[in-house]
Image (cartoon, rainbow, N blue to C red; front, side):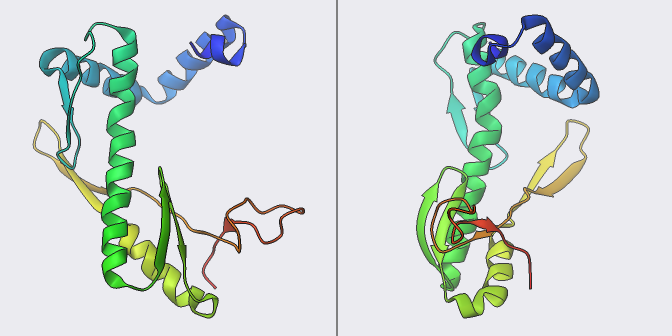
Length: 168
């Protein structure tokens, strides 16, 4: 699929995938676990307990790809929603829009260095997972902030566009 979509030679893509999955064996374990869970239960449950039922054939590779993508994509969306709800309750910014894994907001520019660390703290939602052996691990999905006077990316032709914010 990657070779077809990128029009790269198939052997190059296959060599890359072998090298990548060798460097990060946990990815293959995640894929295998997700497919096994899908085939056993026809549903997946995220760390925030959102359940999705899959109606497609559980031995179809298209259903596998859908299932493998579902857990991380759903989790990022749900974590952002929880963070935005917390931020909205704090009433320190005006939330203008949510776009997939990002949010647009406005605030007084003179308070940027005070407000943005608070924004980041509200968006840092802890997630806990317990392994089959009983080990519990808590993580926070990393986030960042971009600032600008319009929603386009910063460039020479758009000097007021969004660029990464660093404290101070």
